[in-house]
Amino acid sequence: MIDFAGKYDPQPFHLDDEAAAQTYFGRLSASGWHTGSMAMRMMVDNMKERQQAGLGSPGIDELRWLKPVYPGDTLRCETEVLSKRRSASRREMGLFESKLTVINQHDEPVMTMRSTGLIRVRNPDAD
Amino acid sequence: MIDFAGKYDPQPFHLDDEAAAQTYFGRLSASGWHTGSMAMRMMVDNMKERQQAGLGSPGIDELRWLKPVYPGDTLRCETEVLSKRRSASRREMGLFESKLTVINQHDEPVMTMRSTGLIRVRNPDAD
Image (tube, each protein chain N blue to C red):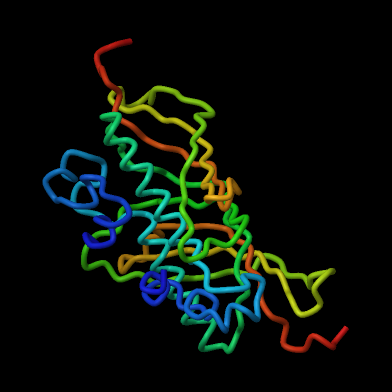
C-alpha cells in the first residue's frame, strides 16, 4: 500500500498513520488508484479462468470510492453485466457494460464503477 | 509499464509486443490504470508545489482512454476547474470538480476524466 502510494499517490494519508489520523481516513489507507488496480487484477484473473479475451476498455463512468481500504483488508469483486452487443464495424468484437462492486471482509462496498469492456467474440463467423 | 501490468493488469497487450500486435493497441501499451496512476502522481506533485492539502476524492466520472500509451511516451496533464464550493457541513473542506486531460508528446490527448476533489480551505474561519 505504501509502495504504491509512494510511486503514484504520495498524499500523507496514504503514507502515514499519524497524518491519516487527522483526516477522514482515520488511519493509513490505500490510494483509490491502488484499489482500482487491485480490482482490475481480479477481473483479469477471472477473465483468464473463463478463457475470455479482453480487448481493452474505452472508459469508466461513475467510479465511487465509498469507504477507505486499510492494511490487512481482504477485497473481493462482484460484477453485474448491464448490457452487451456485437460491434457493428468489427465482427470479432463485442462490447459490454458492467457494474463492478469491490467489497471488503465486513461485506461493505468500498468502491463501485460502471465501465465498458471490449472482448473477443467466441465465434466471429456466427451471425 | 510491464512491472505495473504484471502486478495489476496482466493482459497480453500490456505485457508483450507480439501479443499486442494482434490487437487495436498495435504494440505493448500501458494499462489504463497505470496511465491514471501516473496522472495522479503528477496531480499530487502539483498540489504539493502549490501548498494545497488534498483530502481525498469521492469519485470519477467519464474517464476515457482515448489512445494507447507506449513505452518511451512523455505524458503531461492539463486540469480545468469546472466548479468549486465550500462544504456546508465541514467548514474546513472545499469541493471542486475538475476535468483532467493527459496528453502525450505528440500533443494528443490519451486520457480524460472528470473528478471531484476534496481540499482543505486556506482559512476555515473565513465566511
